[in-house]
Amino acid sequence: MALSQSLQQKFLQKLSPQQIQLMKLLQVPTQNLEERIKEELEENPALELDEEKHEDSHDDMKDEFSDADEYDSEADGSTDDYDNIDVSEYVHEGDDEVADYKMRDDNYPEDDEKKQLPFKTETSFYDMLFDQLGLLNLDEKEKKIAEHLVGSIDEDGYLRRETPAIVDDLAFRQNISTTEEEVEGLIRRIQQFDPPGVAARDLPECLLLQLFRQKEEGKDVDTAILAIQKYFDEFTKKHYEKIQRGLGLNDQELKAVMQQIIKLNPKPGGNIGEINKAESYVVPDFFILNNGGKLELTLNGRNAPELRISEGYRDMMKEYDRGAKKDKRQKEAVLFIKQKIDAAKWFIDAIKQRQHTLLSTMTAIMDHQHDFFLTGDETNLKPMILKDIAEKTNLDISTVSRVANSKFVQTEFGTYRLKFFFSESLSTESGEEVSTREVKKILSDLIESESKKHPLSDERLTEMLQEKGYNIARRTVAKYREQLNIPVARLRKEL
Image 1 (spheres, rainbow, N blue to C red):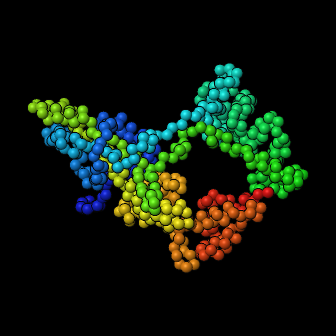
Image 2 (image 1 turned 60 degrees about the horizontal axis):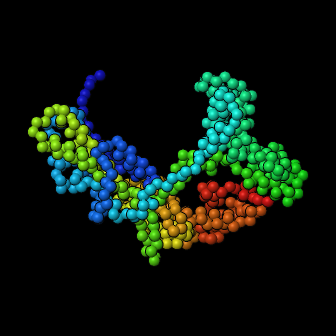
């Protein structure tokens, strides 16, 4: 077989380091931005916070890609690198690129409350359990087993591991020899902890633990206990007639029992403390104010950190520039300094571009959904997809998606995730294009106002929407209902 050579020309698109940095920063919500900046400050000594207050107006945003080549500082330590180190741009006192390379936040709210992360001081769910564990009279072995059990409880409050698996874990991982009986005995003691229902293996046991606790407190819950023990499947499927017949209850007694069960907590650990969830609080990225019918958009002030290039690092560059003799060691040091300064520039530019991208994206969304931001009425939402905003802002669809998926806006009607405003379109009888969000709102209102003794079927909901002029199929109604997390009619039925 003959060997041959050929030339091929290919066009490759490669993201610059600054582009990659920007993409990552765009995904960071405001509440996590300070932590991300703190990480960068710790990693790069050439970057520092500017504590001074500036009177200047906010610098115009630069194109994040225009100076990518200028900051190319990939040094491999070769002789050419050492012989051609240009530090002129780093040492001139009046050079905006370095001497005044800083972030200013004068165009952002100065409210200190918006610049500080909210925090919580309450005890976490696991702290609460371990505190109660300390009140038990346990020997050293029992204490280690109990600690392992508490550590195995999930964030909803359940102990979902099988007892034999726990025994094996203790033997292989902690070299503790125990029995299933001993483990079960400690589980029962932990199940007496607060909140009631903790350390249950499944939902029926969780509900029963809570009912038994109520019985100990003197409440009459015997029938509710019997209903869970014998008719749990019927209860979940709302087959109330079978429960009523099986327990010999009249309508009023059945309703009272169901109310006792419904009031129980299916996730005893789910609302205790802050189990490392970012959703525990939301810091809005934007604020929209209705000022006499004119919408005003501002970016959360914490998106504009006061950053600058370190004075000390620029002084080191000046010393190098003034020196006559430059040995290899000095050149290696100045290359390192140059790389750190360039990295700091990249980061500051990426933060600036992040601000610009956030504002331009939110401005386009606000303009598109102008009527909603004036009224708060979901039926005023217009069809809007990522492509619409990408075209208005000249941004890539993936960039708009990154902003929409992780950012929140605070309005006088509440705080919304940006992706809330995106929806497909649906045609009415008159041929008008309306947002599927509008249809979902009307569907939700119909279900909310229905008689819970005779809930509306998907077929009836379809007819009612069609009567209002919306061309919609039953399967589409079912899909929208599921997206709204609304169960089928049978499961919405109440006594």
